[in-house]
Amino acid sequence: MSEFKAEFENILYEVADGRARITLNRPEKLNALSLVLQAELSEALWEADNDRRVHCVIIKGAGKAFSAGYDLSGTDSRVPVSRIESVDGSYRGARSIDDDAWQLERGQRYRMAIFDMHKPVIAQVHGYCLAGGTDIAMLCDMIIAAEDATFGFPPARDLGALPNNMWLYNLGPQWAKRLTLTGDTVTGIEAQQIGLVLKAVPADLLTQEVEGLASRMAHIDPDLLSANKRIINTGLELMGARTLQRMAAENDVRGHNTRAAADFRKSVKERGLKATLRARDAKFGDGRARVQGPEIRDEHGHLIDDV
Image 1 (cartoon, rainbow, N blue to C red):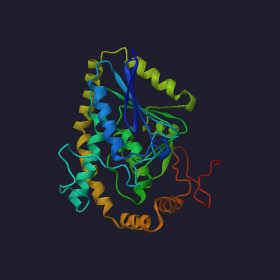
Image 2: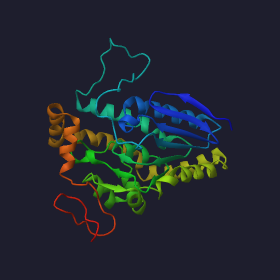
Image 3: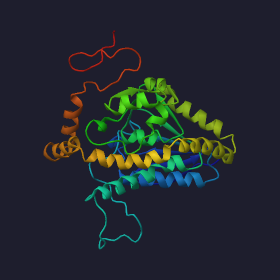
Image 4: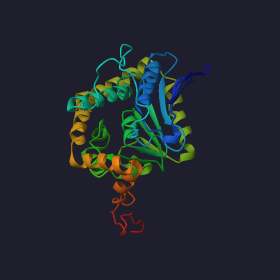
């Protein structure tokens, strides 16, 4: 199959050898997820789902990380809801609780393309996969990670709840709670042990592993791949997975109205985002959870490995 590439501002999109490769392409921002990027991602996913040459999709990140989370800077967020939208209109901002829920659900609709589209999607994860990065990865049908990748949702410590929540369905309730109640992180190897990812491999073999799986699916009729993906996702829906995503967005509004979230916003305004994040995370030491064995820490909150 000849290679095809399309131009976007925040992602790279190419089709070759029976697969579409989508690369989150804001490496200078560790692929922070702006609303523009998410809109482009959704567009590319539906393009791949409509393209008969494509059997499966790979989502990966450019540079040092898959994605370090949502873009909290407030830049690059202007995406018209429709071609009718104009500067003369009176539109939602974040003035009310319902406005907040509406905006969160809007972003979620972009991400849910991964779950709703017919063709299977593989997340190829290296480096950081944090916060919004996990929302993208965990909606994928399979996650293959580098052994030294880092998974977690640190904003759950003070900024809000999770606007997507597939943790329960991948990890089970106890590990979902352990990680989301603390914002602690696990490595790719540990993520495999608790079911967060399908497999963890050495970083230098990550691309080979993902492409090998994509090549196997390229031998399968895409309509048959669709049938087998969709029956499993229907099972997840019967277990409430899709409804839970809508509820997760509304629950994040609840998180945004906590005292902790108000203090976070005040600190960002007074001290800046980077200083606020550093102060928050310093209390958690290295911010890691340990999957196997006791969590013995030094006086700085760092796990002691020789126990």
